[in-house]
Image 1 (cartoon, rainbow, N blue to C red):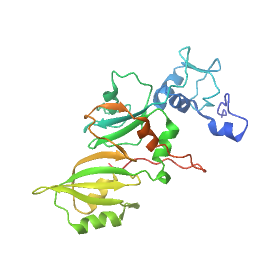
Image 2: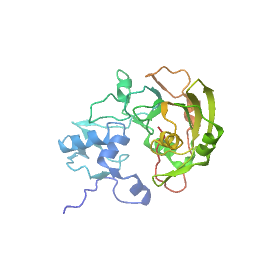
Image 3: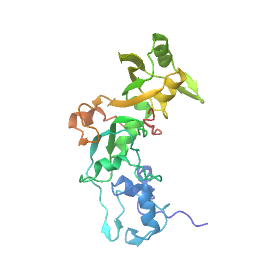
Image 4: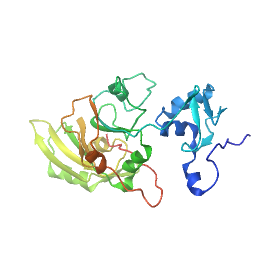
Length: 269
C-alpha cells in the first residue's frame, strides 16, 4: 500500500502540521471549488502542486505554502466574503443535489463571487437567514457549540399552544438518544387554529425544532430563521443575498478557542 503523498508544508513544526490539509480541502479553503469538485479535477489529472500533477485526493498540502494550479492556472486565495441569504422554502442547502432539486446556489447565479459554502444548514421546508462564506475558519467558530451563538426562529404550528407546552420545550427532552432543549419559547401571535412561536436555540441538532414540537403534539407549518448571533434577516427579500456589514460580521467574530474543538451545525430546521 502506497503512503499518502506529503507535499510542501507537510513537515516541520506543529504549526505547519496543523496547516496541512488534504488537497481537495486546500482547494476549498482557497475558495476555488467544493471538495467534491476538487476530487473530480484531481482524478482527471488537472491539478498540479509545485509543478507536479497530483492524482490522489488524499495528498496533503499546506495551502499557504504550496503552489497549486488547475489546468495550468495558479490558484490563489480569494478575498474573504461574508454573505446573508434569505433562503426560500423549497430549495436545498447543498452545492450539488443527486436528486437535481433546486439549491441555494441558484440564488447566487449572476453574482461575481468566489466559491462560498453555507454556514450550517436549513432543510428544504425551512426558510430565512442563511450565512455563506469562503472563510472556513470563521464558519467553524460560528458553528462550534462552545461559541454559544444564539439562533432565533419564528415557527408557525397547527394548534394553539398552552404554557405547559412551552415549559416542556424549555425544560427539554431526550429524543432518539439526544438531549434537545429550547433556550426560550414564547407565543408571538395566535389565530383561530394556529399560532406563531418565537423559539431561540443556542445549539444545533438535526431538525431540532421540528422534533421538539412533534414530541409535544404540534406540527410545524412554517419555520423561518430570523437571527443568528444578533445578525438579523430584516427586510431582505426572499431569495436575495447581500454582504454582511462590518458591524454584522463583527458580531460573529468569535475568538479563536485555546483548544481545538469539533465544529457544530445549525441543524435545528
